Amino acid sequence: MDCIFCKIIKGEIPSYTVYEDQIVKVFLDINPDTNGHLLIIPKKHCLGLAEIDDNTLLHVMKIARKMETLLKEKLKIDGLTLIQNNGSVQEVKHYHLHLKPHYNEKNVIKPVDEIYNMLIN
Ligand code: AMP
Ligand code: ZN
Image (cartoon, rainbow, N blue to C red; front, side, top):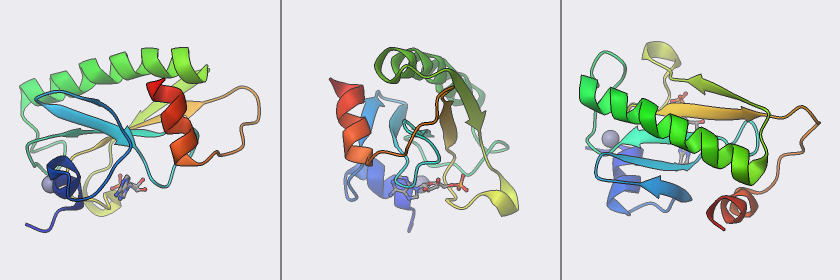
């Protein structure tokens, strides 16, 4: 199957991974809307909200909460929006939850590798 996120999981495409376990992988979006824009994906391929199994969905949300703590600590975010696109508005056809930080102060978009270093150190 020609799925870009499955290739990321297999390590065939590089990613700025900030967290992973047996069920999910979390990495920085390559085209971030804001600094620290993360994607949480299940390691087992599935399409969207209708297809993801309950246990995996719950785990994704638990990790979202963990990542919020990380973003607060490392990037001093002021707010966080969770978005998960389905159907015609879903570009990559492998379930992914967007975590988009908000900042009270105007925040110029920094290179992804710079944000990655801030998150992992
Ligand atoms: P959507 O399917 O509309 O929810 O959005 C797909 C998201 O995946 C976009 O925000 C892209 O910037 C992001 N994306 C696509 N390819 C990659 C990649 N190789 N690494 C990280 N993020 C990606
Ligand atoms: Zn996939």
